[in-house]
Amino acid sequence: MDAIIYSGLYHFLTFDIYCYCLSNLLDCMKHDPEVSHEIEKSFTDMLSEELRLNEEEAQKKQQRADVALLEAKRMTSQYQKEAEKCNFGMDTCEAARERAEEVLQEQRKLSATWEFRARERGWREGLMRSQVNQNFE
Image (cartoon, rainbow, N blue to C red):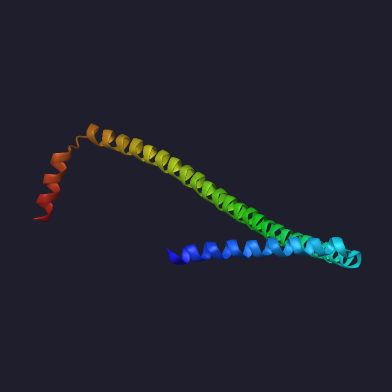
């Protein structure tokens, strides 16, 4: 708690001292035109330097944002390509499943046809099993 009060007091006193120095500087500028001109020039130079530094920082931030945007676009493109591959694979699997289903239906039809012919010739499922079991005993 004391540290917070001390910190606040420090900032208040620092600001107070700054204001006092600034008012004295302004008073000094009023009395001496040469000093006034030098301080104005110095102040202008400082502002110009600060603007230049702010511009440089803004340009650096813009460059970082541009790099991040390009990286995001690259990643988006990569993910889109992966999604297209996945979709193509799904389509291929679906087509293979449909073909396998058709082949299975054809095999069932063929099996049913052969079973029908076998039954016409007297084959019965239970009868054949018992005959096969007797042959192996």
